[in-house]
Image (cartoon, rainbow, N blue to C red; front, side, top):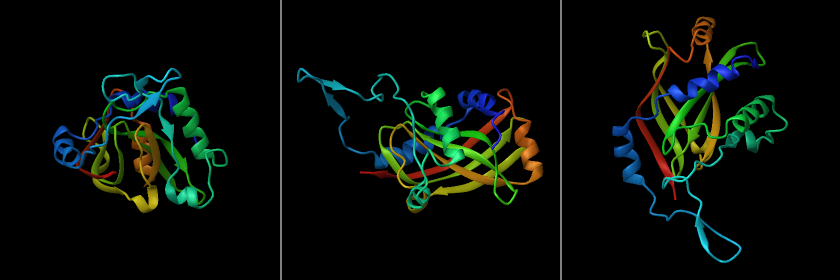
Length: 204
């Protein structure tokens, strides 16, 4: 997998559009967990709030394997794509939109058969774990040239597992040579990404 786009794509993160406020109010608030924030015991017995979601410092992001990859015996250490992603996250552990779900277009991946895919990270910075994530994605440039337009994506629990708070799971979308060229022309100044009709299940 090419690595020269890594720094460019890290910069793109700060311009990404997370799921719309309307969608979050409809879908997230209806399913919001009633669990209290996690707390940790200090050595002297006092309780200290460790959550980022009440205005505290954002936790370091952790990379998780897709469930289907984990079930197949894959690890972060024995797979090149996961290794590169883990290195990128460790270099920028605060990536993601605070208190929201966001997408991070990372790089072009060359598949074993020679085809190409865009590698994305799905990042959960909400306080609850989520599964069965569904949304329509539009991705391209601000001039209206789209690599994907209103593309329905479903990250099922069966394939991807549960996306816990402060974790990221990768997924790939196949592209044509023309779409790859469009991706390579994206910069931090012209990138556009949008999610509509966002739905998810909260893991209790």
